[in-house]
Length: 181
Image 1: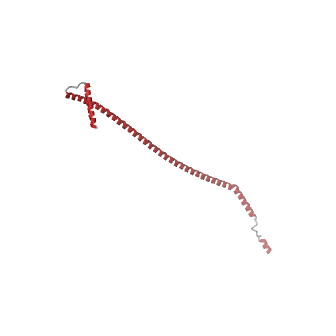
Image 2: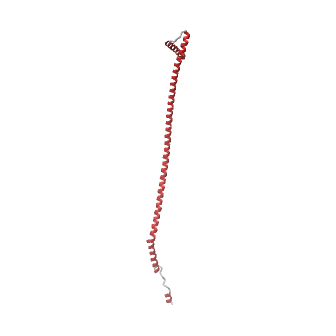
Image 3: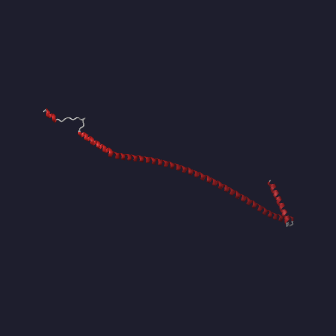
């Protein structure tokens, strides 16, 4: 019976020796690997590369926009500073112009006041001279009338009357001058 049992017992296979199914499975695996590497993985890699490139471009655009915003902010701050300096310069110019206008107006007012005072002095002097002349005439007339009454004769001769009045006024001026000293 030993021979029958030996025939019925299958031969023990060695696990180190590949059998037929293994080779078929290995061949199918390699074909699948080839198909994946040839047709599936390149489009996936291409899509991933395109997506990475798009993300990289977005980051670059974001950085560029950030730099532009910073430069615009700096430009805005510079323009604000320039506007402040310009406003200060305009205020200073306005102050200087205002001071110049005030000085000019004061000068004009002083000149006008001096002119008015000079005109008033001239008018007063003219009025004084007119008053003195009028007063001389009246005093002369009164003096000749009074002298005529005192002397008892009329001094109607105009040349004589004029000399008497002039002498009287000269004496009057001399006495006023000596009294003032």
